[in-house]
Structure formats: C-alpha cells, structure tokens
Length: 194
Image (cartoon, rainbow, N blue to C red):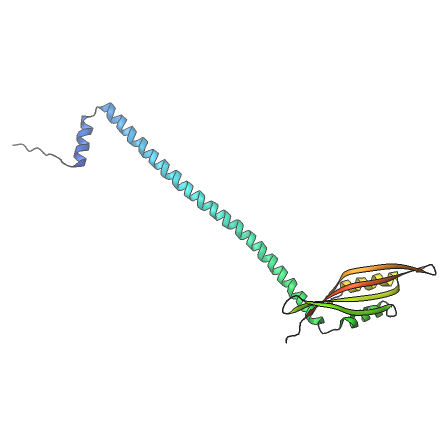
C-alpha cells in the first residue's frame, strides 16, 4: 500500500498555490517578490541614510559650536590676562597720592610753576573693591610743547588715571603762545577693606 503524505500548515498552503500557478505567473510572482524586497531594502537604506545624515549634521553643528567656544575661550583668556595686568597696575599705584604723581609729571616737564591745583572732586564706587575718583587739574600759562609732553606722559603712565575731559585756552603774551589747561581726570583706586 502506498502512503500519501499530506502537508498541512501555512507553508503547505503556499506550496499548493504555487503548484496551481502557470510558469508565467510564477515568474511574475518571483519578480513581484524581488521588486517588493528591493523596495523594502531601498526604503530601509533611505531611512538609515536620513538618520545618518541627521547625526552628521548634529556632529557638524557641534563641531562649529566647539570652534566658536574655543575662540571665545581664547578671547576670555586674553581678557583675563589683560584684566590681571590692569589689576596689578592699580594695586601697585593704589597707595601713591594723585597730587604727588601729577607734581612729579609737572616737574619732569618743567611745569611745576604753571601747575595751579590738583583737587579731588567726587568719588564713586564701581564695585566692592574698586572706586573711581574725579580730580580737577589746572595748569596755567604753560608753553605748548611742554604741556603736550605732560599730557602724553599723563596718558601713557602706568598710573591708573585717564583724562575724561580736557579744556584748552590759548593765550598770547609778548608774541609767545601759551596755554591754559583744565583737566577732568579719572583715577581708579582699590577701596580699603573695612
């Protein structure tokens, strides 16, 4: 007696359906399966490529941000170095009286007789450690050349002072040109801890 094997299950149903198809329909089915597989692989590749491109854009943005941050860090280091130098300059000159410094400059440029006054006007606190004081400096009937040299030394000195306002008045005496100068001088000082 011959035995007949009967397959059951979903795979058997697929095999029976394939046997019923004509050779032309089988080729069309294989082509359809290959087309769908290629479509799925292409779609999956496109999805992965898009995700990878998104990550690459994130990396590029992070790299650009890193370059900006490194540039800012370099700039910050430069400013901190300059700030420390200015702080040392103020600290080194904080105990020196402004009037003594101005008189020393006037003596250096032969203007001690023309220097009329160095008066403290007003003081304002800039922070817990720093204050700015305004001084009024008057120089009368000074020769032009010496006065300009005096001003140049005043501005380029390491003393923490700068000219906020300068008023000049030209005077002719015996066909010679003299100048009167009134300065509003700003001086930075460290406040005494109290």
